[in-house]
Amino acid sequence: MIVLEFKAQGKTIQYQAIDEAIRTAQFVRNKCLQFWMDNRGVGQKELYRHNTVLRAEYPFVKALNSHACQVAVEWAYSAIARFYDNCRKSVPGKKGYPKFKKNCRSVEYKTSGWSLSETRKQITFTDKKGIGKLKLKGTWDLNFYQLEQIKRVRIVRRADGYYVQFLVKVDNKVDCQPTGKAIGLDVGIKEFYTDSNGYSEPNPKFYRISEKRLKLRQRRVFRKNIGSANRRKAVNRLGRVHLKISRQREEHAKRVARCVVQSNDLIAYEDLRIKNLVKNHCLAKSINDAGWYQFRKWVEHFGVKFGKITIAVNPALTSQECFCCGAIVKKSLSMRTHICKCGFILDRDWNAALMILKVALSTVGHTGTWIVDPNASGDLASTLIGVILSGQAESMNEESPHL
Image 1 (cartoon, rainbow, N blue to C red):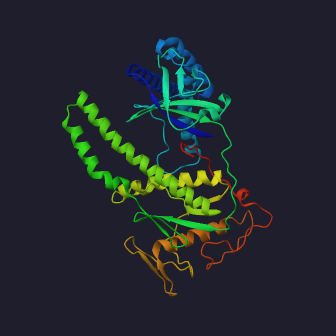
Image 2: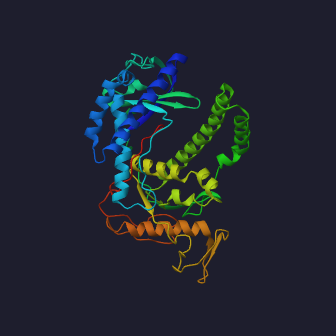
Image 3: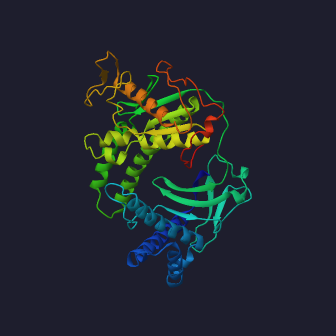
């Protein structure tokens, strides 16, 4: 599956109709969630039946396409299923009890409720919400795909306007020649990542660079009266700055991840719990600014796309253990050099990247035997006999807005 995104151009009354459709989808989701809270133990079928009751009771719900209402029900059940799954797995901390949505930003249609023009540069929403025809502004060519391949259409509201996303079912795998190389990645704050070859990718620090402009926009928000039109405009301008930072971070993570995956056959990285790491208030801003989750997401996505192996390694002691002799060398965060009693001296992050690669190669023993050569500088000393690298492991597939 891939996601193709276009900027939607329409009139003000059409944007108001989109907002009404989004609020209706939010209403259906919250009502289904309330029904589950009042009748604990009901399943997805019961929520679908409750949706039918809502459509008969509320005219504004009936005005929304029936498939869009079904998607709202699926959103509610997804939150419920995730909560039960966390309880069964005994996830530490909060289990993610479903909450009511207060500010939804999207409404999703399935295969009905919309139609494309012959040129596929315009889309018309045919339900009774009054959205009508919207122009699609973008570089993607929808003529390349059959209408049967478009499984869902989503309208998303952002600070800089409205967007239409098409979920297209295609084979997203690309054949590429194996490189015979493996790499370990140690992400950090000072450097974006340090690999097992000793290369360090600089951290762009998009949030830190834009922090002065963010503070200016934030002050202008608080100077406006609550509920006024000027405050809404100031909030929108602040949102645009945040949106630009998030896009910069996402594009950087995608570009770097693509280069790493295409250059190696096996990529090992830390299985970090970002949610726990940001509890350190001294480092939370820098950790969020680094965008480790986005980088891991794109590494796993491109691993599936190009048929490469991606392995998440337990980060325990990877920064403390010596790659040469295996001894534990305790270090604080301020100590940037690894110095072991065996005489092995190396940059702290470089040593951690080597340890991550070493652990990753030892964990693929169920698929075959890897021979690790510490002096190979990231090259695989040998590969599995008779097995294609793309078939040795699997990664989580992620939808990509830009391929």
